[in-house]
Image (cartoon, rainbow, N blue to C red):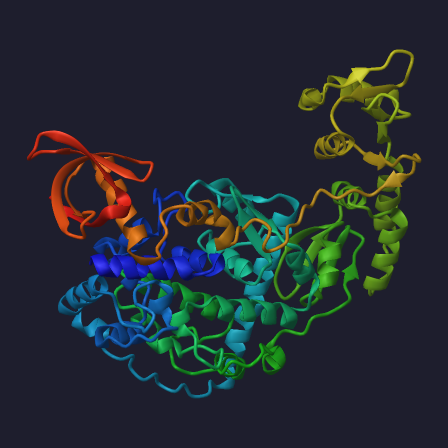
Length: 575
């Protein structure tokens, strides 16, 4: 065990910071671990409980290689610091492997051969494509709502019950339990990211929302495959047939549930048959073989997307088929979608059109968009609603006052300003009436004042420094990597501590480490010292102090305190 710890400590010290951080992360080491040097790290990683946890992260092939003692220098066991430079497991690891073999001999057998799937018939393929289309629509709804208001997460990670209910009420979800699967796919594809207590949409997610359904599916399929655990992936960058997934990580008690969830997600996105059969679709076969995701073979089964709607006098828009995503996205910025199916209904209201204008639309841009979208022109009632909303929109103007550093709220309608002054929902803004001026003033920043008034449904517009209307957006997007620290960043402090501890070269580093531990615990040790004449002598001491290159301790036999030069100490072991 001692020689193993020394060998592993030396190997860890030789790793670069990035590789060392990767190993620590793979072993699940806490960045706040109380290790002082590489010897501490080696002993921690060789602890039986730590080794057992590491074994659960190995697939059947790696477990079998460990049992046979030939895991290789570049495999997963080496990355997990379970083997030496030649791929031979350390003795502490070999002991735990032997115990695991005795307890679960089936876990160390070879992965069974997968059943080669046959082609699915057209009916099953059409059903899979329909599921993928529906799932893409659900995820789009979730991301759209999330882009306006981030989804709150509980301390344990799942989305809060309040936001789940909000998504269900908006028609984005049929079942609340679907949400975590959708967000997991979004995260794998870089469309959304969980940071601290919120889910937010990334810039890639904003682009995805505007993409055709086929492109949406390809992005999700690529992310799904890339995120599969190492044991499911093949050397050709594809993945194993799903029928062997449940047994890939035989020592991990949580793996069967995770494998089932991965398969369920694949079914949702049209990758696998819903009936559990081995039938395979052309788009899945290509993906499993390691080829680039390509929805071309799925396209004939997808509902045709349309680019026209019927505008009606009752202020509704009827899409006779699935509207192209980019058009649907813009239409929903000025109308409320009332139903989502092959044919969807949207309703225009003063509030929905006002919300669009708050996001930058104008009466002219709305008319131009609807004129190009409508098969029936723009009905008179809708044209009137657009004009009346535009006339009212902007009655309240918000600008930054450079002279005072405050925010001004202005309106030609004195009654509207009076209403804002007494509105209890606006009290946090601390609005003050300016003497001799038909305006209000606040210390709060312009954008915050703007959005508070907009949320309170006032017809507000933001003005720039020149006094011209300016479109501002509440949506904040994040890059996919922004919230997530790299392993090297996460373990920077711990790695610095390890590198600042005892060196691992030769016996001196190990000796200093043993002496320091003995002093820390005031242990009784036997110290072998080389005398000036070349002879060696043993002393049994209660270690008391170490400093200035000398060891202090109480000699129990002679009942005196001795001070020994560390440079003369040949070896040390427990008393």
